[in-house]
Image (cartoon, rainbow, N blue to C red; front, side, top):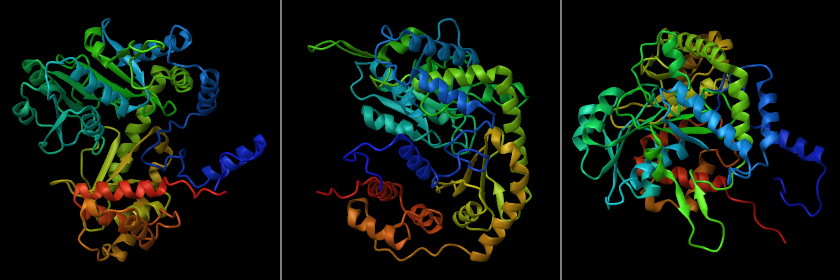
Length: 474
C-alpha cells in the first residue's frame, strides 16, 4: 500500500518506479486485445505527442477563458471540428465536457431548464439507451420513461406514444453501446419535432467513426445534426477520435438551445460563477492533448483508421459465425461485435478468453435480451484479429468442458439486506478478497441471476469495499 503523504518527500525516480509497478497489474491498454474501456489507434508517436501537449496546458484553468484564451481557442477548434463532422452549420455551438456522461447530463439539463414552467419534467429513451441517461434523470430529478425496443432498435411509434406535455427531451443512440446498433434517428426526430420536443442523439460511443464508416460504404441511417429535428448530439473524443481520456463534445443546433445549459450565480461576495458545463476549475491538459491528437491524425488518417476497424470487425464477426457454440447477437455493422451463447456458458467463456489474453466485456441478461459478450473494436485490433478465431474455438471448447457455473446457495436477498459485512463475506467466498479478478464467471452468474435492484446494491457494496482506505495508524 502506497503512503500518499509520507513524513518526508520521496525522490521522483522512486515515485515513478512505484507508479510503473502499480500499472503492471492493469489490463493492457495497447496491443489490440482489450475490447472495452480503452481506444488504441496503434499509431507510433501519438502517445508521446499527446503527453507533451497535455503537459503544455496541464496547469491552465478552464474556469475563466478570458484569463486563458489559449484554452478557449482550443475548445472552439474542437467544437468546430465536431460540428463539421456531424452535420452542423454556421449556427451550431458546442461545449467541451469531461466525458459522455457529463455531455448527456448537460443535454438533459438544457432541456429541463428550457421549460421552468414544467414542474415534473420527463425524459423519453429506448431501453437500449446508455445508463448515463438514468444517471442524468436521477441527478436532475427528471422522470424517466424507458420504452421497449423493437428488436435491438428504438421503436419510434412506441416512443411517440409515451411523449406527453411534461416531456422535455427525447433521446436515442448512434450507436447503442451494448449492441452497436444505430437507432432510426430520422423517424424519432420527426416524432419529436412534431410534438415540439427536443431530441438528443447520443453518439458519444461511435459518433467519431460512423461518418467514416459511411464514407466507406457502410449502410447506416442518417443520425447527426443534418437530420431535421435533431437538436443536440454528443461525441466523445477519447473514444474513436483516439484522444486521451477526459474530452467529449456536446453540440447544439443553435445558441438559443444551448443557453439553458449554463449555470450562473452572482448573489455572493466572490466572483460571478458562470459555467457552461458541470465543473468549474478544470485542467487544459486533456483539451490540448485532444487538439494535438486530431491535428496529428487528420481527416484522411481517421478514414484509414476506420478501414482498420471495419476490417477487424469483419474478421472477428466471421470467427464468431464459424465457431460452434456461439453466435452473433447483433449485426456487426459499426465498431461492435456482440456475441451470444449457442450452447456454452458465456461467463465461463469470458474467463477462458481472458486466460488466452483476450479481455472482453460480459453483459447481463435484460428483459428478452440474453447474456452477451461485447467487443469494442478499435484500429489496433487489426493486427491481432486474425489470431482470434483459433483462440475463440479453443476457449469455447474449454468452456464446454467446464460446463455451466454452479451458483452457490445464497439466502434470499433484498437490496436492503446488503451490508458491508455481507459484501466482505461474499467477496472472500468468491475468491475476490485478494484482489484477483481473473475468474469472474461465478460472480457474473450471480449478478446475472439477481434482479436489477439487487445487482445494483451488490455492485455498489463491492465497489465501496474496493474503495475503502487503509486503516489509519498513529
